[in-house]
Length: 102
Image 1 (tube, rainbow, N blue to C red):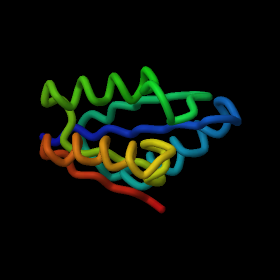
Image 2 (tube, one colour):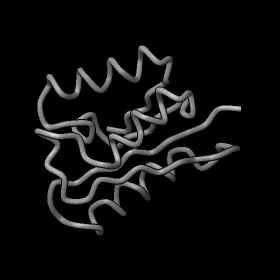
Image 3 (cartoon, helix red, strand yellow):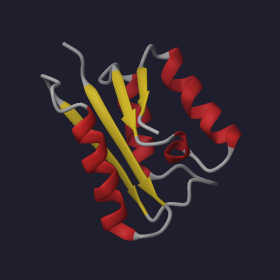
């Protein structure tokens, strides 16, 4: 059975901005059976060090605990094209399917 994950991040706007992303992502996979794990980084810029939510996601990915990731936008994975490409490459090399909603 596939294990879905949702990753949400906001650099500003606090928990309300994260909750809006989470609501959108959950709606997109509302018919999914099985576990859905949520990783959050609130008020994390997406440059420099990885936030604890993304770090946890990548750790679980390496452990084989995630098969499918849902994000609202590629920019949730990082601020720069280089960071986004780095995270996307890690996901793809682990065989993780990625759904980007926007």
